[in-house]
Image (cartoon, rainbow over all chains, first blue to last red; front, side):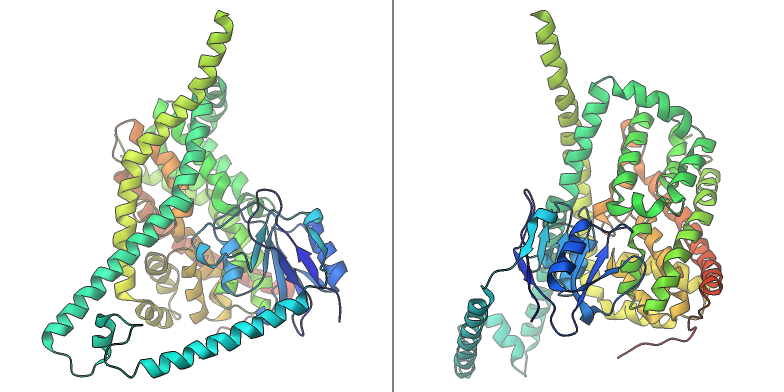
Length: 344
Length: 183
């Protein structure tokens, strides 16, 4: 049996330690990091004997992936592989965040990993397996207990409402009650999810952007930026240049991750609009100009979600990069045409 | 001494400006987005994912349905990133094009429906906060963003059909135009 690798979190990172090794068909380390190959991939492969695959160029069947290496700043990718049950190593310090954050757990995800965090695993696996079997045995016992109890009319595992829902002859009143309960529960769960999203995703970013605005406006940098940004973002030609740069096929995957570059650019332009340096109707073409690289880093993952074949991903990545480039500038121009009469 | 005091004041001022901006957003944008998120999450739960899957299966044949109607409804119902999963109902050949359109719908509709992509909301909000500062309504901008998006994202998807054909020739492969769905 080949060696296993132990990966711990870096300072400020989250999750882990993960102990992974080649297991049957699972012998590939896939890295989805915009093209370059992080040093940890080599080290992991060296220890475990796995082979490295660039997930940005090709795809691997999910059941052959031993681990995924990503560089996600906290929007999507960091949750996608954990959701599929693939051990995930993030070279950024992202913790539980993004829309799929509920799948990011310490058992399957570790972040801020560099070469120093990767080491050969010791002989702890035997004891771990033993404890797993113990757990299984005990869970079987509890299941048996549940079965005997549920024969009574009301069981202690279920609320009265749930017991009623299982009974076959429901009275009209029960039906109304159950229906209303379901709707209210849906609302409540939706509220819980929404508050979670706000707390973990939107408000942290707001804090970051607010600090950025404070530093830009409070120091002299704001005027400096205004001098650079206003001629560029203050007219349609400049905006088209921004759109062109962001959509360059070799640049767009690097500008994409997390939409962070776009969001910072947007904030900078927003500040200048607020100060009156850029006319407000140009906000519309600006929205398109700062985002021509939209999702360019995400192509293999998105196509993976669409259950695309490997061949399709190999064709799809350059194809979408080209089409982003062809579309980028025209989008800005059309948006400019559509901005006539806005805020006049 | 005066110089040091001035320096300290300037230093604190950096953070005070940021803090004012932050609490302004907490009072205006946060509650509004939160209410919208709750309402939209509920609506999506009540309508259910199955219905949108059915629409997806019927959309394979027509570019207008494929790159405009489907990603628009999909982004609204499934939000980012799960809207990309609807691509599985399309033939291999059209999957890159659907991705191209869907990725953009995750932004252009985000101005009015922030539940679609809350993590990248500041693409819109960064610029829109400037509009808000001028005392102008953000909704005008959000609606035009959505409408221009509707047209241009469709064109984006459709153009990708051609770039896909081009790359196919380059790599000398042929992607299937037939739908192939397991299960």
